[in-house]
Image 1 (tube, rainbow, N blue to C red):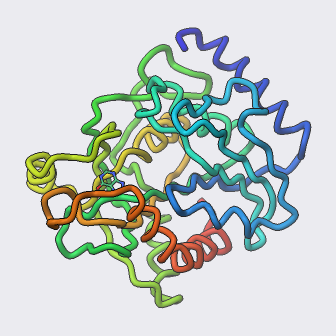
Image 2 (cartoon, helix red, strand yellow; image 1 turned 180 degrees about the horizontal axis):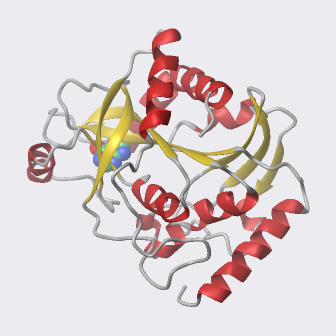
Image 3 (tube, rainbow, N blue to C red; image 1 turned 180 degrees about the vertical axis):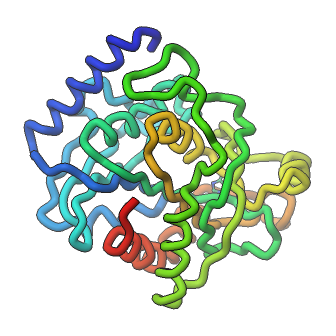
Length: 277
Ligand code: HPA
């Protein structure tokens, strides 16, 4: 993607494809990570589209099946749920990773909730921990904003508040009220698909990271360029490499995600119902 006019036209065509199914204007967009997709089932009167039916939506090349967009009210708030996110390790260039966020903004979203599965680097964050993301480290050295400035984007976005502080305070209060245990920490983005080495994890720990994963940061960067507030929640699914004798296995990641999804869903429902960036 090198031509901003073409980019804007592609987003307009994608918006038109969604609008052919629903005129719902989402207040919030939610991106659901590995094993965390069940929340989409709670959207009421849901209008569901395959991303394969949305022109220019990047196609998942590895998993071989498209993602879904689910639109409708969740806990009284109109939302767009993006289920089956795209990752850099599937072969997409960095710019493509921002496409879902550009689409969400063009559909009217005013805030973005990002969830993911992550490895725990902080030894106090065991499997099943929910971690409110306070900040990130971009150690993939990729950026979806590289290239011409897209429509409505800032050339040099400020990242001093990448995970909106005011929104985080509200999320914290909801967790406390609902008695949902949570931690807070810094997320580091690695491009994957291989998991990290123990030496990399020691390096990330010294750099101040609490959790590691292969997503979320590109979407947060795209949102920053569009002025869209972001809230991020990691589900810690495994101790990061070298912190536990067991080898890392994607099946365990999905399994832990499923175990904590009710708690995560309750928290996200509360956030969707009660907060408004
Ligand atoms: N590393 C990177 N990504 C992950 C991990 C991990 O340990 N667990 C879940 N996603």
